[in-house]
Image (cartoon, rainbow, N blue to C red):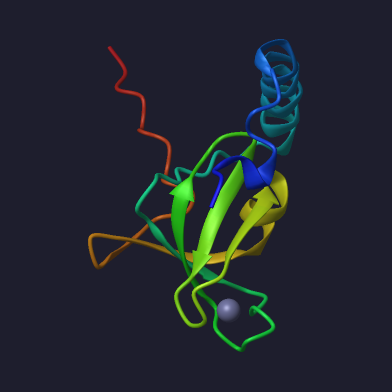
Length: 108
Ligand SMILES: [Zn+2]
């Protein structure tokens, strides 16, 4: 099986940069940053057609590649869409905060 099924082989250096800038702007406007890493398990609000709602993260970037733990399918989903659908994030079997509280400023 060739690897470029998801169109990764397109010379996307500049394009990727543009997307990163756009998404960064979008994320800043949205105000929350989700800390999703490769290897995390995502519990999604919306279940996969197979009925499963647990996905493992294979790749992060402007698109996420997530793997359905129930039926084994892999899908590419735009980051914004994934983040909207995340219910819980598990890392190393432990639930992590989607939006970690900002560190309180120490005065003085
Ligand atoms: Zn599935």
